[in-house]
Image 1 (cartoon, rainbow, N blue to C red):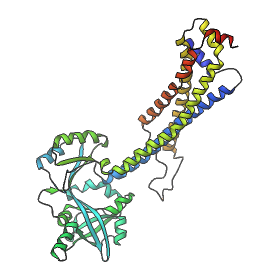
Image 2 (image 1 turned 90 degrees about the vertical axis):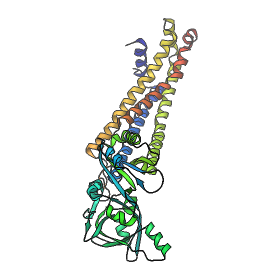
Image 3 (image 1 turned 180 degrees about the vertical axis):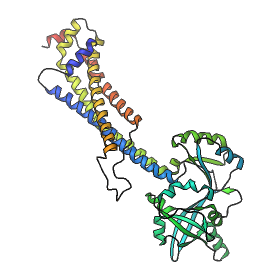
Image 4 (image 1 turned 120 degrees about the vertical axis):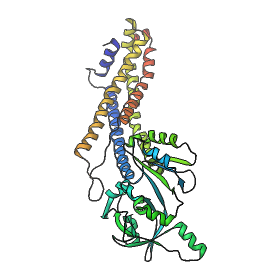
Length: 411
């Protein structure tokens, strides 16, 4: 251990009775510890809710969607479709027809989005299948009428249950009826299942069926579809596959978007909440670091004679400066390490023992979700250490500028 490190540690761990400077140092240690632990814990809770939200949205939304740059329809070449299908990371690819429709049952009306896929691609809607709470998930045709699976909020608005028949009209059909002054013949479908996604917008917005119903309602041109939906084997490959698809397509007529871009408002809000929380809780660390600055500055004043003696014995300005830098860094390392361990202890305790429970009968989870992200922990720890290191600059400069004769005479 170098002499400046030894002296720095002796200044922190003094054998003398606790005095005002020692109390400030202890408060600094506690403040940084609590601040680091709080930020790690809260960010991990945000990550937990984000992962929960992500799993719900991914069950309904595609990981990647190819849509027209303009207009409602795209004509995707079979050769390009087959080429994309061969990409190893892609699990499912499906040509979808979708659009806004009006559903009616007697005097009840509800506008919602109908998403239709080929019957042989029904496994693409596995998330809807898992969320079906009444009836069964079926998009095939029974008794010459196509089946439809709708959200529970839509079923409630239309006052329909399993086995009921609903009448459907697309915007194009309504427009044709108005222009021709004739009543447009509705397309009928049988409610085979009702799903509940626990995402309010989805339960009132979406219905799912086969492309047979989609073609009847939207009457697209031969080969035209609304979108190409893709699900990946590993969601972590999202950005990589998006870039690869853009290179494959290389056409201004198409646009490749991810599931996050399909829900921009939600994820922008979540990012802002994380940033705001980090900024607010960082105030705790800032205050604690300011206490470190005050404590070191007062130590410089208190140890003026010691500094003078050290300089008289041959210690140069760099050694004197390093003493107080090491003192601040030691405080930062100890408190940051303690805060990190405390924060991680809380997180893993919540994950394994569920200390903070939630009523599972009212919510889809039974405890506050927590997800520890290594980069968040590293960022918080580095942030704390950097601030503590910056707090040592002024006291170290002030200590190194102390004059030998004035310091010795001060006592």
